[in-house]
Length: 44
Image (cartoon, rainbow, N blue to C red; front, top):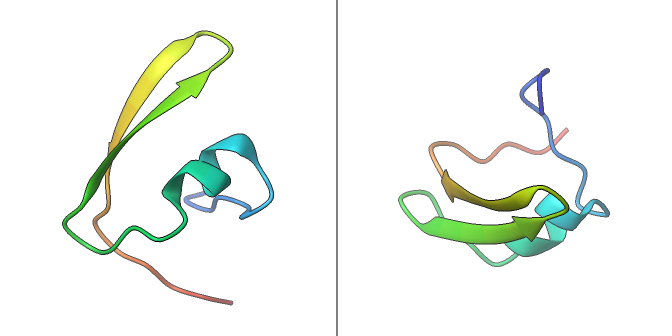
């Protein structure tokens, strides 16, 4: 996350699967909930 990359196999990555640019996602993590806004999607 700090490097601007999220693995699709991580809990956050799995929560973002199927989302598109402009979408938001609320993902439950061990420390609570995090809301993400999808700004860009790239594949490497």
